[in-house]
Image (cartoon, rainbow, N blue to C red):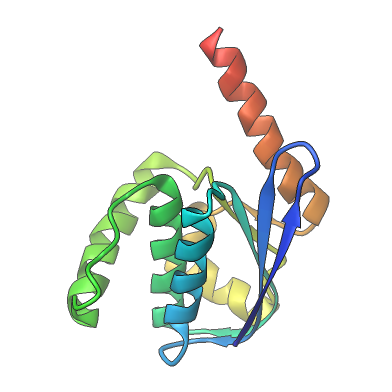
Length: 153
């Protein structure tokens, strides 16, 4: 899988991670590492561009969920934590996430038909806002920021 970055500085700073190819057990760590790197650099809102992602496995879904947890500010699993232990922890966390609503800091853009079917089947469609127009995805962060600002007044 190839990952490229685009930074959008319009109304609210947003970084777009473009995923191209297959996201599976051989490369899911690349997505997590890239997300950790940009989070450490101060990025707080991202869009995962899935328009060229042709396959996603359970490991890829776990990576997406781990990215969402990172951008929500949650503790990351330890590097030596087993995949089985992580999957169980992620399953429990996903169940709790369904009660919280959609992710605020991670949005999905234009998943392919095959990937969308997996997202729907696993329930990720209710965890992540999914957009088909990139401008709408970008502006959704600005809209959320304005709503939070007005609620503080």
